[in-house]
Image 1 (tube, one colour):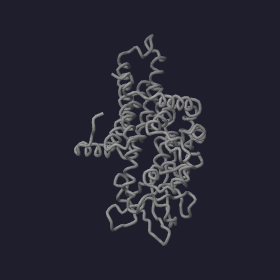
Image 2: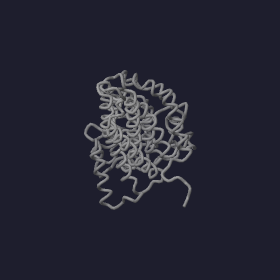
Image 3: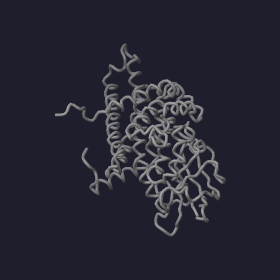
Image 4: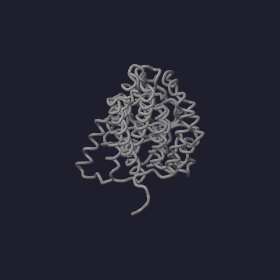
Length: 388
């Protein structure tokens, strides 16, 4: 029998977690409440993450990045989310926006757009959803019409995370309306003529991460900014989401862990009837359930991250399952954390109410959990789930 630990993080991955946690405890968590109250982009978090190479750790070394694997990237996102969910969307959305280039872009596109993101000089957003095309992405109406050596884009993209802050955008648009899924992907720059943004959405949570519409009004871009072959954009979009749903699972695990940490600390310190409330079995059972759910979600997320790194055939199952289970866990655990804190948990004086509000979005974006269950069921029925 091997002496190697089974189902354990490598020493290198443990060091990544330790470094990110120390950074976030010092430079992210202290500002999380203020970011939520003000709704301002967490610039201090961004600067700290950039300085430590954690703002876009997934970018390969040949493009100036840290070259973190899928699991290390999840560890970064998890630990940032434990401190501030809005800030965790910096590394998460940078991966979402750039992954289409990594998966399908030309070498020229990669060398042009990935180094600035790796260096912290730019952020990258992902523009798939539209007012009439959410879960049904193929129903999008944004058009890209070829005109000589250019494409001209017209349309509206909705629910775009970090819109206005990001310099670059992966935009999906219809290039052949007569063809099923005749959709292509393009890189659009914030400063391209005809690009503008709607007002920030007034949201329940993750308030420090701006969510806005992106307007494309006769935006002319060179044809060499197409990502992948023409009419392959939807396939690229779905391949991207197979991988990035794992990062949303990691975000959800981080939010849940943060809430559990606060609930445990409070339960040890709060006294009623002459003793800490942690001594009462009713609270112990709640905390036990919270801890079990968080750890189960974490292990499923890490299993999915391994499949993401390897590009396994069963990634769609594991990515959807991890995202669905972890986000449901985050919602349950943060709700229970508020309950553990009682009246205090319902106030802004303690962070668990913010975490509860932040957790909700993880059940919605990058595919609602109802859609995830459809994906999981189809994968099961197709017989592609593998054993661990």
